[in-house]
Image (cartoon, rainbow, N blue to C red; front, side, top):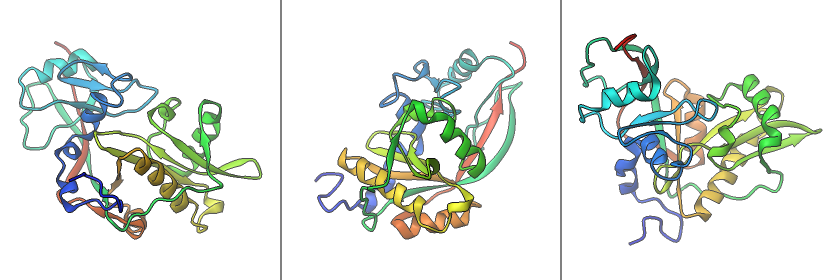
Length: 244
């Protein structure tokens, strides 16, 4: 049976896809391999594309040296689960709780006639909107990760959304931002559904990440047809040893 049924329903088993346990690694070794820096154990995006990095597995004893080779000494890297014991000299940084959402059969994407595709020429406007709306990390070349769309009013970009991580079979929707003066008009929802539509057209399912404390955003995404994926999700960093 196809993973995605013809009515676009995502079976409950889809949320159990192990790819979702390590989505950045799947993207960095798959759809975004051409952007990846690193090797067989640890990879990251270029600094002006995304702060995301990942390892193939924390069980390989060589992973620690691979991370140092990749980011250097005294540098930050996404933290392993708290159950993983750090080698001497490694230090855990701050952590915060996150949420991962996956599509359900209630999610029906649709193209938006007002949405315009954004690219390199739109980066200044995208960065300006992100600075004002604070949806999360967005850098000068983040637009290379996927399809980004926006809505303009009087020539100004007032809302945007796009694709970030691309784990196998999935598209992560990210950079959902609306100018404060244009909120309450449903622009963010319209752009999310536009991105979902084009992801479905490619045969991918939609997923998202959010801060667990951002309950307003989570409720919005649940109303659109996403649901929380079971299990806890912790975002944090570790700092590599300051010297070898």
